[in-house]
Figure (tube, rainbow, N blue to C red):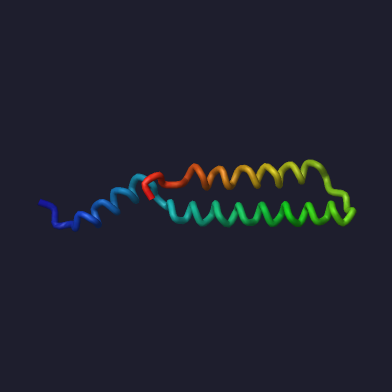
Length: 79
């Protein structure tokens, strides 16, 4: 009936169910790394005696929680 290889068909169906999954995972990893690096810099400024705004610190901590959580939600249970 169909001349498409079954493995290719399976891969294409998987891609239609979750388009751009690889790109999303790369972005979540990049955003996670950036948020943790930003938090590290903020904590080093605090340790050095500089004052920072509490709102900025809370935003950075929120990003450190949000992006790994989004990466966790975007995982594939079958992989």
